[in-house]
Length: 232
Image 1 (cartoon, rainbow, N blue to C red):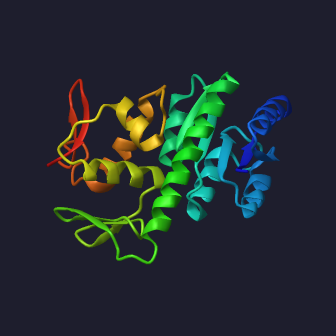
Image 2: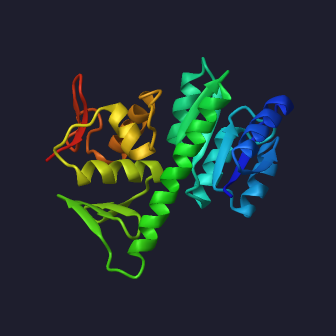
């Protein structure tokens, strides 16, 4: 039974989210503020649904602190008009966002997809345990799949879990072009992608961390009108 931490300060919405998640068979932990949410992380939730507008410690800081200690999937909740908040949330390490007002069906679908993806990743890591390190190498870029680390020219690069998954997928398929919708399917696990801007934010963040000149990327290329590829 997966455990979901719901961090939402609106009592009615928190109750509604919790009710629908329990109907799907999930165990639900609930918090109405940042300190309580961070304390509940000790119970090891499998996924976090996090509102950005919280009293005390806001959702941005909660997201940042969670990501410092855990790779747990994070879905942020944000107002429809606050595009900057969505981008900042993704840059801090959130895996996805849902804009208010939203349908419970959409939220449940996102939760299921991220949990399914997490299960696949954990199974893959278990299969590799005890085996030699598996690496992807592209020029001076090295991705250690077993250790979940990335270096360029020997210098460690800190990536969020989703950035790591996206980079590894592109490098494994270097030279091939993938649309944002296809990347959402392959990396996020969404059968019915909703907002491809999620991919654009992660691509931009990867370029800022990997490229010598992010404004003129040579590693992760944009194919206008089609999508993205890792240079062959």
